[in-house]
Amino acid sequence: MILPHDLGTWRDAVAVKASELVIVPPELDPVQAAMLKINPMTAWRLLHDYVDLKSGDWLIQNAANSAAGRAVIQIARDLGYKTVDVVRREELIDELRAEGGDVVLVDGENLREEVKNATGNAPIHLGLNAVGGASALRLANTLAPGSTIVTFGAMSLQARKKSQQSHSASALQQLLLLASDPARTGTRAANIGLAQAEAYVLRVLANNYIGA
Image (cartoon, rainbow, N blue to C red):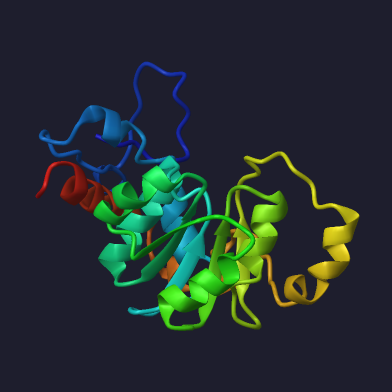
């Protein structure tokens, strides 16, 4: 059973409304269920709070083999979105394709052209950046004008160099960074209760980990 988000864990007992609880199926691995409120919910918010994607729309992410990245792949597939998943090692390509990634590419200087070729030059309006530095700039350069890139991590611990700043200015001007506040974004997340979102993500996890 999953408790509401606004409860701390330093307690022996708690009284909550039954409607605020999410029941975990007994056949689901407890390890997977335990992370439901972290990476999968991060993926849910990334896919709902910033761009109102429609079925068939493309998004792109780096660090696609991370726990959050894998959750993005699985939830996006369930919602009908297509993903371009960027990794740093070639041996991850088949693995992420097997998990539902539509396009899996190794990050590099030719990323923009490779994305165009792999997607048929389809417009991409959402980028998810968990790496930062040069990788974030390459991700930004694959997006359509007026798109949104959401930074939720900085795994590279790499700041942009001055030479990169002027080179990428036009691309960065196209990006809109929004706070994760549904009231500001006006997206579907504003109308979806947290418990319902958790239940949905739980179902996606169950489908992927126990084959339901």
